[in-house]
Structures are given as structure tokens and as C-alpha cells.
Length: 471
Image (tube, rainbow, N blue to C red; front, top):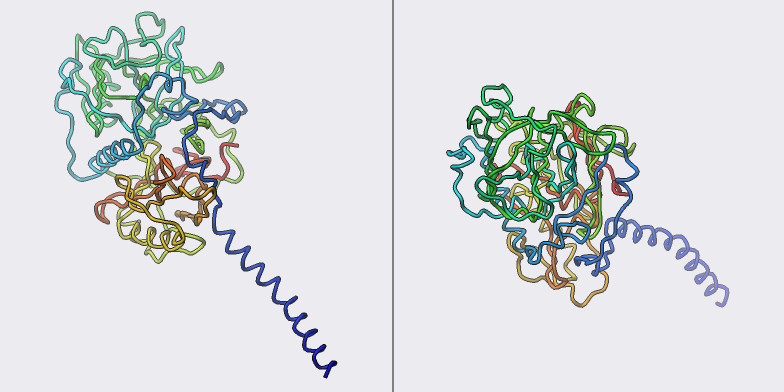
């Protein structure tokens, strides 16, 4: 009897030894599909943690969040927008993009610098990132919002004939620059403004006048000229088409203007194509309290970057289009037909904060996310974000990983900082939203791009993504 019992225990022990590794492997596999987050990492920090990545790369500019402690604009903004404000302003930008991509769109009717309506608009988008660029000769260093959804580069200029909003640095004075030249209103460059801004160039004393109005009613109008733009001591470009704003409205967060990185021939990548071949890349930092970079050229593209074909929208050729093929949550690919994304189309945009999906796709995403987060208490919606949680009683939380699949068999794992959005631990939300209907164009926003090296190869017709891009 003793022998029999001993044999049973020995067999059971051997069985456990065989089963336990498999059990442990299943647990490890399950954990590999989740991120563990420190709840404190979800909160804005008041201390700047600067990365040296921009310093190590050629032709690079440091990228900072407009309202973060790493930005010199941060000190001026005594009342930065709340997260709810940011989301409302973000929706205004999305509405503008959808309007531009629709068959019918509204243009600014009055384009003269002295005739743009003198009304206060809100911001181009409060989730924007800024770089410091030298304008003129001798150069004046100015903070510019960089924007892949816009084409022309402009800054506020003296003498501010109609109005200039408050900005951190001194307003650029073209009369003190040896390299500033006005563009004639009869020149081909002036005629090109129509495709770049949606408004034809006008004349003021034979000088070309530009006007651009954004979806949130902010705008810039003034003289269109050519100027020297300095990125680094070895990256100086002369005769770059440039808007010298004389009537500018909107709360641009103290930034002096905008660096246009779209695909139009007047954009900065097109104007510097001889040197950079329309290639640029950036890494957006994991939080507003850290830094990233914007790099021009292909000298520092990581070997880990995988490329997906660039898609062009006939009605708005300056946008960078993508082909989304699917989404996975917690390692499980969602049951969404790829045709749902293909029919609507998708763009990647540095200025849109929250990724927009066809509502059918977003419904599947939030359902899967909620199931994976069922152990946490849900709380009220934050503006357009309807899947929110109260993490007040936690120091760490586990959230499912989310991956995006693009054309060319490219899988992009979103960083843990690119999944949720919140200003307070009591209201942290899934950072995705649905469009109004499945026919509206999707947008891959900047929250989801955090810490990725995002490469735009305009000449090669492709966009690339690489992990840990800000390191």
C-alpha cells in the first residue's frame, strides 16, 4: 500500500513538473500582450526631462510640446488649455480636414491682408509640437509649430499692419534682414498659393499677398516673400517661400508661426528637396515634459523602420495618406474588414491629437479594450473620449497593448504612452475616437505616434515607423 501511494505521489509530482512550465509560459505570453503603467506617469510633470537625441542627429531640431515645461513658450502661457479644451480644439481641426477632403469645401472669401475678418479664433490645435528655426539674415530664432497637414511656412512680421497676437520671442522684422525679398503678385510662386492655402494670391502694390484660414477660425494673412531659413549651422536655405504675417488671429500658444511640412510644392520639404529629397522624420516625446526631434534627410533612419506605401487623396494631395489594414488589442486582431478602412481612407497628421477611426472600427476597438479593462472602474466621458477610467486607488495599472496594421504587411506596436489620454488619475481615457460615419477619412493622430520614429519619404512614396525612436 505504501509503495502504491508513493508511486501515485511520484507520478503526480512528475506530472506537475511537466505541466508547470507550460502554465508559466501561458502566463508569460498573456503578460506580453499588456503594458504595466505607473499611474503617476499618466500625469503632466512640471519638470523637463530633455533627450539628447536631437543633438546626435544631423540636420535635426529639438521638438517640444507647446505647453510643456521643456518649451520656452510654457512660461508665457499662464492659462494653458485643459485636456477638455484640447479635445474640443482637436475636433475643430478634424472637421476642417474632413471639409478639405470632402467634395465640397468652404474657402476664405476675403484674402487681402487688410480684409480678413478681425475675429478671435481659437488655436490650430493645442496638442501641437514646436521647433526653433532661424529666420532671416542675420537670423532671428523663432518657435514654429510644425505641421504635416499644412504647406506654407509663415511667421508674424513687423509692422503688424492689422494685428499680431502675443508671442514669446520678438516679432520678426523683415526690414532688418538682408535676405528678405517680396514676391511679385504676377509670379508663378504667387499663383501657387491656391493649392497650398485654398486661396488665390492677391496683389498689394504689386506684392503677393497670402491668406490662410484654419478650421477653428484662426488665420494668418500678409505679404508672401522669400527668406533665408536656418535649421542648423550647416543647414541654411535661401529664397524659401515664406509668409510674412501682418494680420494674425488665434491663440497659437505664443508660437511665432508655422513650419509647413505638407506635400505641396510650396512646403518646406518640397523647397529643400534638392538636399533632403523630400525626406524628414520625427519622434514625438512620450510626454509633454520630455523632448523629441525633427530631422531632415535620410542619414539617421533606424534599421528597425518598416515602410508602408503612401496614399494620395485626389481632392487634397498635400496630405500624407495611409492604408490601414487592421487593429489588434491585447494580441487579438479585431474582426474588422480591411475594406472598411480602405473605403474611407486614412491620413497621418502631426497636428491632430486623437486618432479618428470609422465608427464601426472604433466600436470594435472600444469593446475589446473595455473587456480587457473590466477590473477597473469606468467613469464619465471626457469630451469626445467615451472609454474612461478612475485610477485613483491604483499605483500601477495593466492595459492591453494595441497594434496598428498598415499596407505592405507593416505592424506598428503603439507605445504605452500612446494609448491613453488624461489630465487627472480619476479620468484617464482610451485615446481613440470614432468619426461621424464610416465614410469619413480616418486620422492617425499624434498621441498614437508618441516615441515612434516616423519617417516621411515623399520622393519614395512611403511612410515608415520604427520603435523607440526618441532614444
